[in-house]
Amino acid sequence: MKTKQRTLAVLLVLVLVLGGLLWFVSRSNAAEEAASSAAAEGSILLSSLRQAM
Image (cartoon, rainbow, N blue to C red; front, side, top):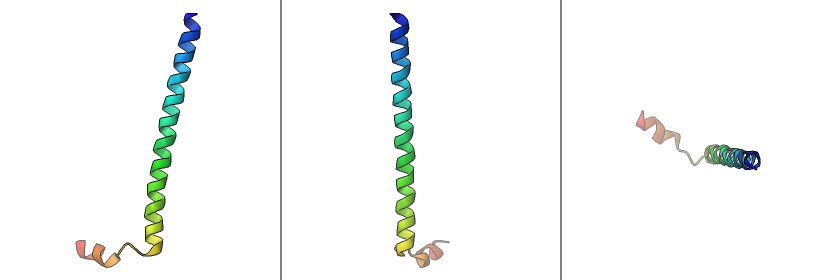
């Protein structure tokens, strides 16, 4: 019985870790996509970036 419980616990931890990793990757891809789309639309003003330099 102990080996079944240990196996279930390992599988549960594995599923939680993989779910967290998938969430992190999809969130970072969403942020990158938003920045790319803002740049494509021209809503990022290059003149304000030049003044900051």
